[in-house]
Length: 121
Image 1 (cartoon, rainbow, N blue to C red):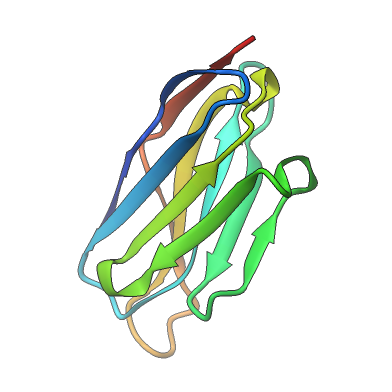
Image 2 (image 1 turned 30 degrees about the vertical axis):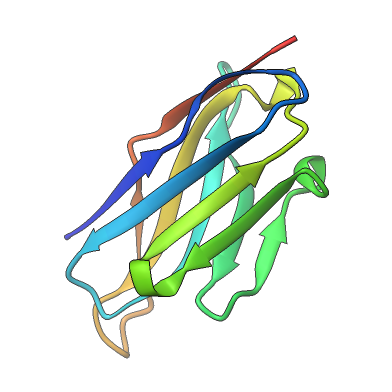
């Protein structure tokens, strides 16, 4: 079993910054990819950013130039640096990881419990 523990959410004024962290623990062979999703009230959950074990990154258009995803493979931790925050970034942010238990395992998806990010105008 794999656990994802998030930290770093909170309340910030527009234009401010927050840094989210997510640490994976448990027994596994590899973490193929990690990422952050968000879900605002009444909206579908959407992918914000992701990063592969090799360091390839993806950022959704609405956060490009403002958010940066990174990971520390040695610590099984992924980060999301969020700058120039806007009220529309307000959402619950969920950590996601695709984890393999052996070389042949295509991966299982795991989710964190979510952390609230609120940006006031």
